[in-house]
Length: 132
Image 1 (cartoon, rainbow, N blue to C red):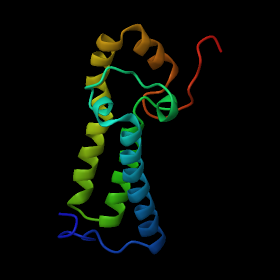
Image 2 (cartoon, rainbow, N blue to C red; image 1 turned 45 degrees about the vertical axis):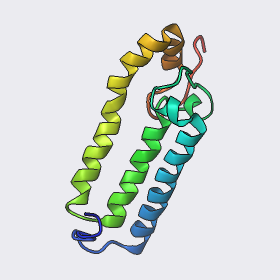
Image 3 (cartoon, rainbow, N blue to C red; image 1 turned 180 degrees about the horizontal axis):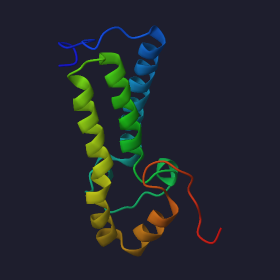
């Protein structure tokens, strides 16, 4: 639909279009990269390890964060009256997904996950160590 309805919202300034492409490529590229580093099984809750370092030392959901940036880029590149609402819904699903996933993580990993969740922000922020 992005192609069929491409730029139905009108023309964009070139710098906004370029920013869109940068967000699109870097956001989705990083999402694939982080998923690859984590491993497909861990990324989909099939393996038994809790990753808390690297990208996961800064965000409990780095794949969702960078994908949302990619979605923003997709919206800007397509600049479509049809694509903007779809991208917004897709991004909203990534914002809501941790609310469904975290209870499972708490049950599966117990105190380890609870300690991790207290130290690392859900999406974006500065990690903090307890007692500091």
